[in-house]
Image 1 (cartoon, helix red, strand yellow):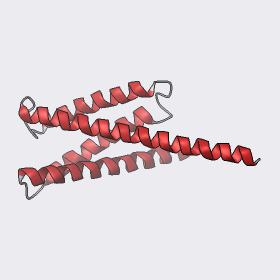
Image 2 (image 1 turned 60 degrees about the vertical axis):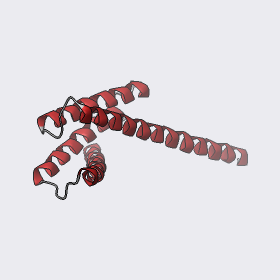
Image 3 (image 1 turned 30 degrees about the horizontal axis):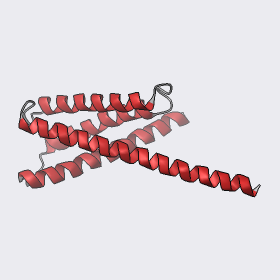
Image 4 (image 1 turned 120 degrees about the vertical axis):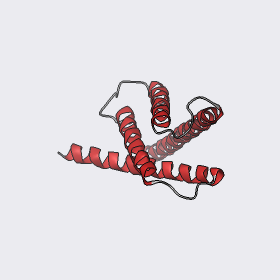
Length: 143
């Protein structure tokens, strides 16, 4: 039962983070295209997108699922799955034309976002891991 609550809390946290990221991205994009309001239907679309993305994130990177799969394979799968889901949302909700200049721009921005976030997490993990190893060495020397 405790695991169920922990998984629920983790999913809720991920959904909140992804929803905030989607809203902030929409805010920046709406400044450029001149939108003054956000329709209520779009808000529900963003909530459902955040929920789907957080479930995928949880399944791919949780220790409970797919623990033997290489992280590189997980990252590539994550990129492709999210790209497919975003294209489905773009097509189904008519956010923009699926084939054309705007979709090419979206693809470049999405790829850039994904690469920056992935590099950021890699650098963060490497930096904190090195700090932890340094502290562990100092601790062993003091024994």
